[in-house]
Length: 188
Image: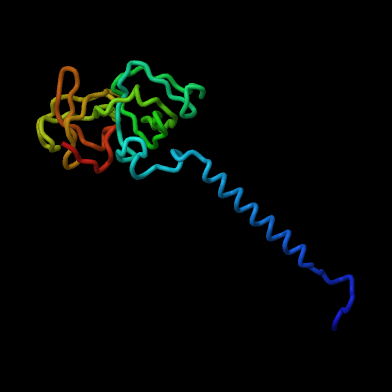
């Protein structure tokens, strides 16, 4: 059955198709522009930092006694947290100009100015009662029982163990018991 000249059929004129094509094209251009305008730092979670050329993510530490974690990468952005602990390990996940997007041991993410960060490697004990060993083996002599939250200098990590220095003691801790060192990271 054919409906010639019937009002039931939907007729698309060439001008309607042109308008639809134009709207779709404009939408794609706007979407592309928004993606290009988004902060380049938000997109980089693995690879190399554009400002330093260093690996992302990577661990650093607080180099100052007082450091501000901000909502964004400028001094005008609101302060979310104030850190009052020098040497606290922090993970850098992105870079933008003089700012570093960081993650702390609780998973809190924000921005810090690079001047409050240090490249010195530190680690924080995550588990209360973790044993500090004389050598990097589980059967070596126990030097001390560590409390959670203790922060020390990391000298090196090999085969799942990290050599640590605390104010009055040093030894080896299992890498899995620390925040401030990647899971399989090794360095000397």
